[in-house]
Length: 153
Ligand SMILES: [Zn+2]
Image 1 (cartoon, rainbow, N blue to C red):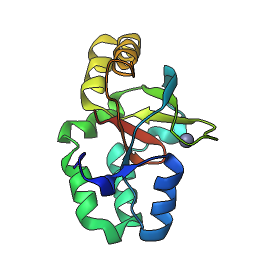
Image 2 (cartoon, rainbow, N blue to C red; image 1 turned 135 degrees about the horizontal axis):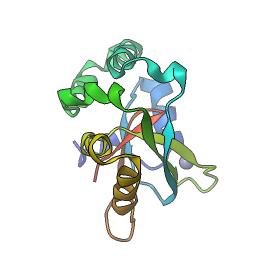
Image 3 (tube, rainbow, N blue to C red; image 1 turned 135 degrees about the vertical axis):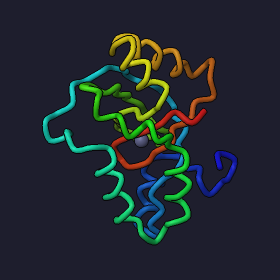
């Protein structure tokens, strides 16, 4: 699906625009620059389970069932244990929009979350920093909602 042009968006704004027009809710954006990576404690209101949020996502984009199925298929069932993590790795980055003011999103990557669970937040942040070396990797972000991403390289 990462080769499919209809999934690729030049900027986050274009993805948001597509959301409005045809209710496309998910897509792939290539970051221009990574500005920060850190682990932050989850706020209390964020205590709802990943599953619950995912149900909401599905409701809001009912029209795009096939896409949602693909998104769901791309998430291992173990991802649903994310609620065990007290903090999340956050990535701040710029998309290719000339006037991009930056995006800050939490990383929902199964391997990274597993590493965080096992070795702690600092290890997960270091791993993400490694993955975010744009001169080494052809990094793409798979944006599920406006507030979370998965590396899709
Ligand atoms: Zn942007």
